[in-house]
Length: 227
Image (cartoon, rainbow, N blue to C red; front, side, top):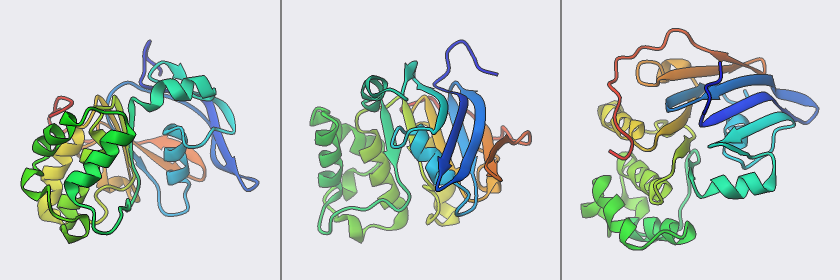
């Protein structure tokens, strides 16, 4: 079912690469909250995420983000300033500090420089601001990546396996952070079990079909966007 206004609307959207379906044509809508997308390696999960994030175009069907048709260049231009994307195992230049990394993201996204200090404080990175990225433990490095992704206060955020290298003690705190990044967040993982219990909805990709799980626990209370 698609609401009158959904953050993401796919109508008959399908993705085909190399002569095979990565995602067979499907229709769905996402309004808000945290949505999980699960699939093992080579399932097409990253290709679906890239398509939703406007890095690729669907082979067939229509895709709307934030009320704009992003299968057209004008629609892509209209929404990209309102999107945030953090790739799996994101890269940074050697010798770059946390503050420099986030400041570069702010410059690239035409965001005022004062937003850098604000996002560093929000993500509890002020004390680590002058540390080089490759000196950080995995949880702080993820916080820095999220700060760079969200420095322009996006309305829709895409995260590819953000918790893949995070140890158990830090996961719960970071999950709380992920849930407050934006009004709508799409997050991926290889196994749907890694997403149930804290995502509002969970989809899995199986044999190029998108299947929604009906066993999603609501054990996490909703955190307002921007917290």
